[in-house]
Length: 204
Image 1 (tube, one colour):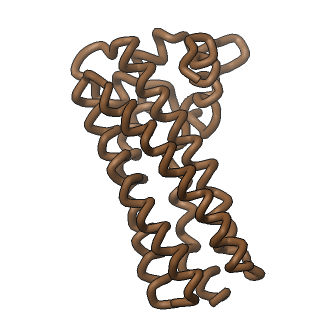
Image 2 (image 1 turned 180 degrees about the horizontal axis):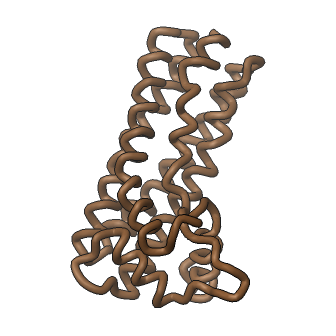
């Protein structure tokens, strides 16, 4: 089964998307809250100027998605380990899936509170994909525990497809962030900005 574990989900690295994308400002520049609000309104297709309340809910949603990614990443890496201990992986997977479920509940609450229909529709789509990913990973875990290669392949491909669906949902947002802020957008930069804003405003 180890060869299958290495090959079947090799593309699941695509799961680790939709974390944070933004420009890296020069040392002489700083992204202000107003600029972030305008950029996010453009990226998420807001019907008008994004309200501060909606912006903060979107920020909270993205920070939770970053937490989701960080929680899921070790599970994906574990499956690609040729020396995988299936018992230990399944035990860790149970804890990971439980943590993902808790994060997803918080994401769903944040999404439902967004008033602007444009951003809300995008976050709801991503939340719905996350909701389907949880049982997919449950099935992966179950197949690993049973040593069922066929079930593992089926569940793994479903998880992979959902990762691709999330990439497709996030793609236009990322493209519009690049349009707004330029081509220096990279993972992590905006997350730091959002976490600092969350700290200042008590969102975290």
